[in-house]
Length: 358
Image 1 (cartoon, helix red, strand yellow):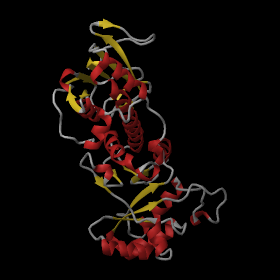
Image 2 (cartoon, rainbow, N blue to C red; image 1 turned 30 degrees about the horizontal axis):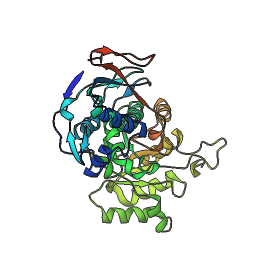
Image 3 (cartoon, one colour; image 1 turned 180 degrees about the horizontal axis):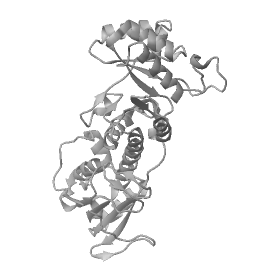
Image 4 (cartoon, rainbow, N blue to C red; image 1 turned 60 degrees about the vertical axis):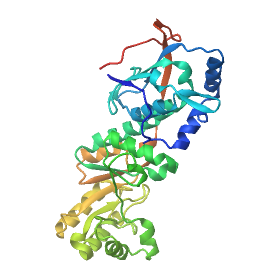
């Protein structure tokens, strides 16, 4: 268990000054909690409480603690004649560590202090913990499924753009080291990577080799990963690009639509669709047989932890997995209750104060 005394404001890392001002004013708070804070202020009720936070999923990866600490340090208090009165020094926070594996109903955080000073923060910190823990947990499951192989976080285009910074941080806590936008690495020292997009190939008339050569010309310092499914012939296109670029080619990326059958299987019955194990094996074999064993294979398109486990089970020679929208799906909701007022144990029926495990 970690204990924090929130006795002074910190440099802002996770929030802007505008964010802080709006949070202090209850802009992002459920209105009934703003009204609760107002009642406490009018009645001068400074009762000290312990608020307990938990979630209901199994084997979740806890994420969002550092944001919650910054939130409490900078937004605990009240306004007096339009001036903010900081009361963060009246609060303490006990918590499990960021990145810990947490279980259903397990107490994760205790916030102790006068409720009047942080009643307006409940909506915000529960939302932080729910979103960050969901992403970190989903990413961690994919990383474990991939074993020693790399995973790239490709989820940027699957959600609202302002979520990217927090999602990228959660992906890092979940175990990913490579992401796809600069926003993803704003809160940590990561690497934004990418490949030649289908759009660049389209602009050059569907000529993948030309697009690859131009990319290499303009970005010679960046490891070149070339999409090879534009013309739905991954084996042929991989060889064409490798023959032209040689050692400049870091890898090829297979990203076929899940309903499409690659031309490799055009004369076969019951051909598999999308990016599949057999397609990856044929691309690998063709590259190896033609002297391009150094070229890595990146597989993307509809990947989940389950799909990766199947690829690994059947020994697909994938070097790197690109995973996107599946990492944003599901829920990992957090709940909070007051479980102590002063030294008195008190909580709604079915809830009670429990110690946080070390």
